[in-house]
Length: 153
Image 1 (cartoon, rainbow, N blue to C red):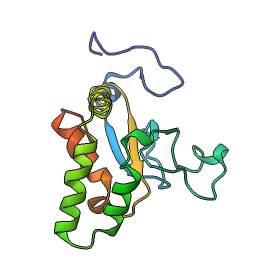
Image 2 (image 1 turned 135 degrees about the vertical axis):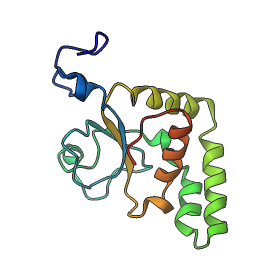
Image 3 (image 1 turned 180 degrees about the vertical axis):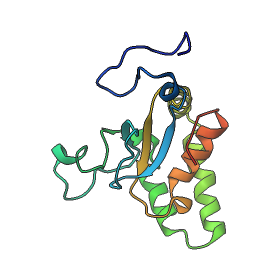
């Protein structure tokens, strides 16, 4: 095992006692509500609203999310723009404007933190949208990747 790899296991799944697992720590971009990967770790919901009709105590066990973090979701106005985008040009407007929202200092700091954590912890971020290519998840993937995040394809 590498000298800087943690040697103690803890209940959170963030630290492991095997170096090969430690060096595979990474970030996943997921659809909330989908089955979890065995080593997925903490699931963060980057959505504006909690899932409808799901009791709060089932958010984690129902594979929705462990932590709700709406600060990385588009504003209510941008959600409407994104969901209403029918053409590539309309989608490009959403992407441009959502990136502008994510350029605020609090959002930038959060993205920097997640990018750094992706090298030492398994976790995921996600949204409800079925098609990632037409979801803010694709923009978050790009913004995290340019910050050096270790993101699974």
